[in-house]
Image (cartoon, rainbow, N blue to C red; front, side, top):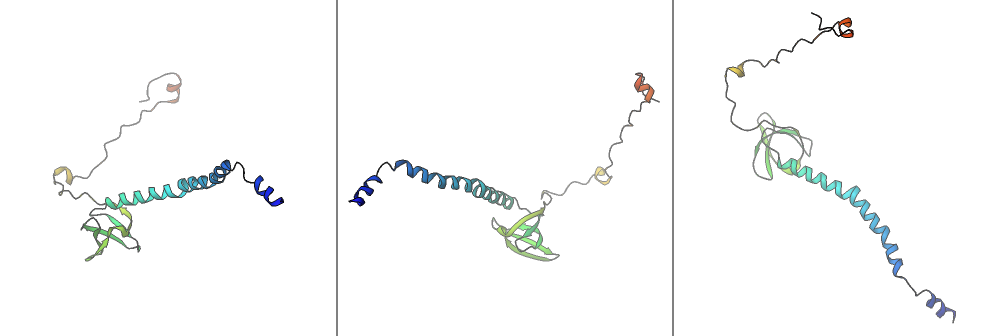
Length: 144
């Protein structure tokens, strides 16, 4: 007789309990999304953009730690890398972990003219204007 009364008391109004129990799980998922999933997606996107921009003349580092110079982009997935003078290997683009230096543009060679032969010198700097102490106090002009 006591058992049937105990079951009858525990069977009422359990609709709010489910939402209270579900809230911590939703909160944990939101925290994981902003702290783990979203930054990882940004990192993958940046890596994909870097690999899409690999071109001839770039100095790259492979996943094995080998540094080489990209000599030819064979396809969307393969590049030819020169490891030492005369030593060229084909690698998969996804094994490139970093681009150390960007290469020159592969446009035609620059026209050589007389201006290119001269060394570039900075323009002469104007002499700074000097004022004497008394002239600056009493509004006088620059010292000559």
